[in-house]
Length: 452
Figure 1 (cartoon, one colour):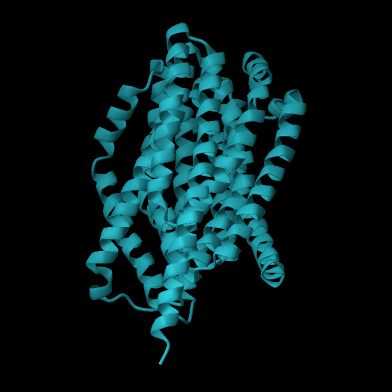
Figure 2 (figure 1 turned 120 degrees about the vertical axis):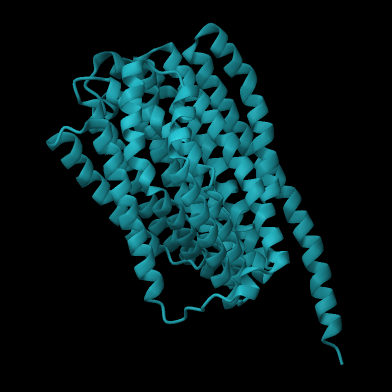
């Protein structure tokens, strides 16, 4: 086992480091976007974009299972040395992504009207949000197909390709935001347009990287339409979709209730959550590395390697979250002063910054186990944990809605994240016992069948 650990550790750390670099540029680009909007004379632009982002979170993150399912299926195929199935996992996800994207473009107007009809925003705030939506929605094909490609590269442990694609998207997004928002004065529309263009650039990098591989396997209709694999894929996607939908409901409820309390509260909460996302992406470096390796180890049926991976990813994830929390919570005024020049918004950011500590530390546990479960393609466990956590989110949030209390809103979202970590921890302990029993039986049967 010591030899295995010596081999897994550098492999894990390499993937984690590359994934952190790839992941962290996304919230940094979001922070740059927020900062440019936050320094405009009118606060309605940052508030309007934050409402539009809620709608896009529902749209795009509802289909994030395209990335997660592709990662787990590809990694397990790699662990079984099944190159054909690894490629077909990508092709099935790309076909599904293209179909969904076409539907989103056809239905963009009713989706936009329905989304803003549900959200609570002043007319001028909503107008800014609609400008952002109308520009960004055209990136649907690029966004969803990139999910499939990124999941495939993750499953194959090709983190350098992911880094190149993500860096291209986010650096271009920052540059285009500066041109469109600061130079051209296009405000919310410019922010949405820059995001859309950068997502197509990301897809371009993914396509070029895929086509440059010498070991490509062409799709065959029989394997693409294999009934058992399609059944498993749709069952996994169903569970991941429900898991993601509940996650979106929680955070959109948090955003929407803040908007009812006031424009300044909404802006401050948006900034705080941007920093939470940045810390989450740091932890996600370990979580994403765990996705890749957990899938491979399940494909290999190596329980010892999987158990070591769990301990390793947990240690790295908690350490990253703690370091970020110390900086953000310990120095709130200079940190959040970079994001807004509005005195009322900055004062609220400083007041709410203490909530970053529980969000980041509890979140680290949830993110790491989330990554492990995705790599293991245990969608049912992820779904059930999210249902329990979502139910626990309701009481404090309902009280916050009745009393218009920001304090209880933050309590609600903290309870939700803490419950996610705890339920996934318990689920993982159960799964380890199940794997131990099932793999021992499978190995015994293999040994018997190999005897003359």
